[in-house]
Length: 217
Image (cartoon, rainbow, N blue to C red; front, side):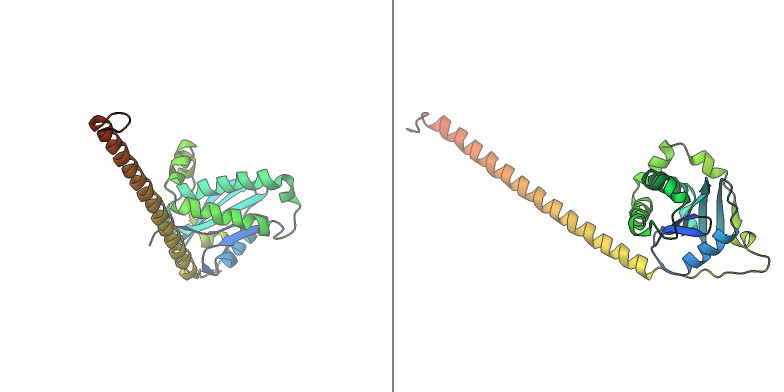
């Protein structure tokens, strides 16, 4: 199974403004516990929990967080967070500093879903990140165990059920297969039309050589 972005949210402190999850489980609960302990100064940080990583960007009091499979690396998750940050602030701006909880969820959760899908499956995602020159910045981000952000002795078990995610993958695959089938069908139709036209042109040329322009042979 491929590695993916699985969960993301945007918050002001502990006030969640928008979130989206590709999986069932308690990822949002773990994320909320992190928010309770997270310093609000500008920072980039990653926290490990079992085989998953929580990647976080904090800018001007607004937190952008995502969870991904451990093997997905850090480059693409942080590119996703920066992309989402730009889109969110362009859309809502100063509203982010005063909006109540989940005020922007109805609208922006769809953006989170779309961008998560893009960065999880589109090969251009990593290319975009390389062009933006953010690789060196990500390399400086330290990965800490999630226990460091929690109270001493506190433990949280992360439960992730990827059934929904696999189902979404299946739907996406079938949709792409249908699109490919349609494209191939139209390609075949165009090819047949071209061949038919070519045959007519060749037949016309043969007739012209064999007969006079008025078709008197």
